[in-house]
Length: 325
Ligand code: ADP
Ligand code: MG
Image 1: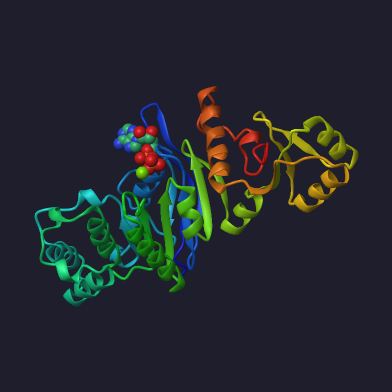
Image 2: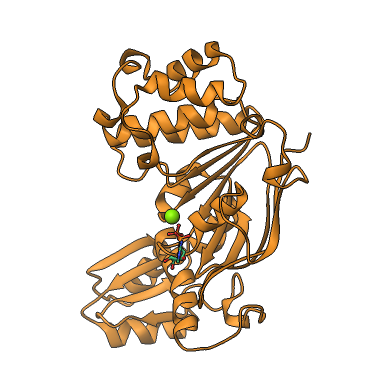
């Protein structure tokens, strides 16, 4: 069994609005794949189509080569946490899971197991509507785990959780992937994905912007540079130019030099008896890189009437035009 999710040209329109625009990518087993995009990018719509809850306008999603409707005992293939608030609030946590188990031919024993996994055993008899957001998310996750599925999908699981809950979910996803399962998780936060995902699929305005390993994304985007402040700006610029060092002058009176050459710059300044007020190695944040990547997609769409199936313009393709300044 391959346990892959394959999207091919997946598209969803709501009237004029193109929520998901020609997405093609594959989610693989054994790793956590992060599905990253700003609010409104089309993540939830994509996930609903994966589960057969929404019909694609065009294109296709397959789970192990099949459509969701064609899966026998779907809960044993794929478990999903979509919207924690959609739960039946009047039932106890135990009864909620028991109903789900019984209607899917899953033994009651399994209900106890998943309650234990998510740490809700002590409150299993309490009504779910009294649950905190974090407990609700845990119950949703228990439901996703119920069929012991090989594929798991979580839509913004850490939204509104406290740090302890976030930490718990992050470790759970990693351990599920380590067991060889396929884990697909969405977020609008780059910082969250950086800590959780091994692979990254980025979308903006429904379009695919990046499909890359996390390590590759970090290597491409954590630009290191040296920030310099000096009261002798003109003289330092002359010295750096003479030494063949490329300098970027920022608007706020600081200078930036790419790479990590702070020692070299400090020594050059000393040789010429120049005063430095700051000489600090810096790392551009991944959040910045993500904002720039998706900002381009927003800008592009704001200024064009390009039809849905038009190819991406070159400046929108991965890795071009948004590295550094
Ligand atoms: P995300 O989960 O990334 O925040 P969504 O998939 O929820 O994004 O939404 C993508 C876009 O599709 C948004 O512009 C949203 O307003 C729109 N959309 C989502 N569902 C519907 C719907 N049922 N009817 C009309 N528009 C929708
Ligand atoms: Mg969403």
